[in-house]
Amino acid sequence: MSQTKITSREYEELNKKASPGTKSYKTIPSAFLIGGFICVIGQALTNFYMSLGLVKDEASAVTSISLIFLSALLTGLNVYDNIAKVGGAGTLVPITGFANSVVSPALEFKSEGYVLGLGAKMFIIAGPVIVYGTLASVIYGVILWAVGLIF
Amino acid sequence: MPNRISRSTILLPNSPSILASAAVGGKKEGEGPLREDFDLLSEDTTFGEKTWEKAEMRMQMDAESRALKKAGLHPEDIDVVFAGDLLNQCISSAYSLRGLAIPYIGLYGACSTMAESLMLASLFVDGGIARRAMAVTSSHFCTAERQFRFPLEYGGQRTPTAQWTATASGCLIVGEKNEPPYARAVCVGKIGDLGIKDLNNMGAAMAPAAADTLKTFFQDTGTSPENYDRIFTGDLGQVGSDLLYELMEREGIPLKGRHDDCGLLLYDRETQDVHAGGSGCGCSAGVLCGHILKLLKNGTYENVLFMATGALMSPTSVQQGESIPGIAHLVHLSRKPQ
Amino acid sequence: MDMLLDYGKAFLIGGLLCAIGQVLIDYTKLTPARILVSYVVAGVILGGIGLYGPLVEFAGAGASVPLTGFGYLLSKGVREAVAAHGLLGAMTGGLTAAAAGITAAIVFGFLAALLFKSGDKS
Image 1 (spheres, rainbow over the protein chains, first blue to last red):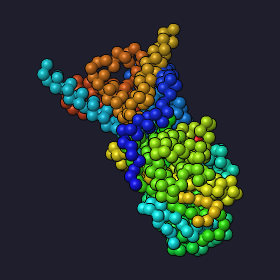
Image 2 (image 1 turned 60 degrees about the horizontal axis):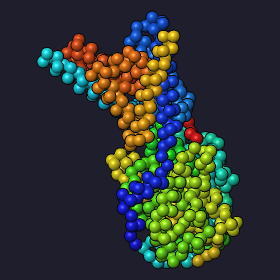
Image 3 (image 1 turned 90 degrees about the vertical axis):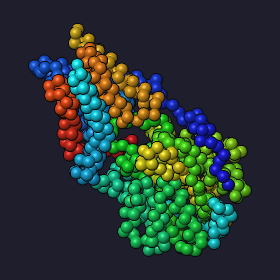
Image 4 (image 1 turned 135 degrees about the vertical axis):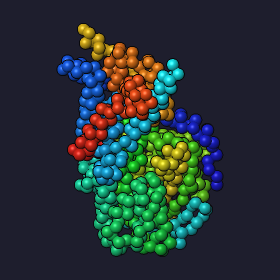
């Protein structure tokens, strides 16, 4: 007896019909709202740090550190993933999402030890962000330098 | 002696009995519609252990000891155990059984393991190779997430076709013909793959194998869905079930109305946020050992087909762009012996 | 009033950048990890060609908090470092500028792992 006589392409069509689509009318607005809200918190922190006398770049860096701290705390308290269920890209794209993707494997793989678990797996999700961000910046730097030589 | 009537279908003339079964579940399973059917439900899904892997092992041990107790047997009364789970190298099974000193055969059938182990246990007893055989499996949401997806605290959104790995374990003991329910026939599934690559749509990946096993069994035995009170699939979920209907419809075997999916029975999809339904070895194991066998015992059902489905990929194969092969094994359970 | 306008702009641009990410999640097969990589690289490119700087001027945290802002930071660091040290700056500028974020993630990640455990989900 042969496999059910149906091609992969036909089956993909059936699958598309059977699979419910994402409710984008819900997910996109909530990503907008929650992502926007996180940025407003960032703005409030920046304003606060500038009122303490930090210059803009410093205030911006301290804001990032603060948001990362908050994200780490919420991740540790088992809350961030619940916000992300609603927030989607709204909790993924801000720096807090980057922090969550570093903190969550650190928590998770501590059970495999501090070195090969926590240490080795901390950047299992966020690693590519640093790798490709750094590579892109180096390429940009080399181009800048080369252009500088020519002109 | 088992009587092979085709490459896949084997009748069991001695019709071994399911002597006893036990189902253990976690918190979410305890909030679902089948809460009354479990032997043990733990609010604390760590089961008092330090790691999630140990928790799953403990859960399996609970199922084993309860099944033995209900059967009035000791580990030394069991001639062979068939066990498997989702974790790499099937550690939940190996560690849960390491203290029991029962001859052990480890299986990997992904979420089809309950049907696979029950099938082999029934064949061993029917053929006189073993007097009593144990079949056990489990899955734990947290260990499966850690291994197959993301850290638990990672903030990700599940797609609507994603399924929820059940935190549950089921164990049953098959023995020589005694009281119902009996295992009357088995059908060994073939691997089917129609090119689904989406790890978040396993129901769709497994439905073709399920359709093939069902069709084969009906043809080999000359029966049709009307001959059975209920046909249970393991964890096709909503998407996979709909696709199974569609595939069977094309073969001229309408299934709707006679079919239930364990992944859809275990949770309330409206209130429990499981998207397309439950999944995992423990899903079909818990529902079989807690729910289905109970209904067979009390006479609600006369004849039932239990077919657990499995997706045979690994994170590596998926990252390498391979599609997901599916498998489905079937066991015919009945109140009447062969 | 100015302050309120700041917040409004941060909300609007930040929200918009996240909404684009959601569109990518919903309508493409891009995994979240790929989306994050794309955002950072896009930030480096947009920063490099001089488009992202004005956006940060306009929207403040609305442009610097999303991961494109992280990419922008890398490009800004490289530009300053190349101006100061030549080719060496191409190697040092990016990570130097991003050091605060990466180090904070490592430190707080480690501390969180010491203090907390991952929990069951429902």
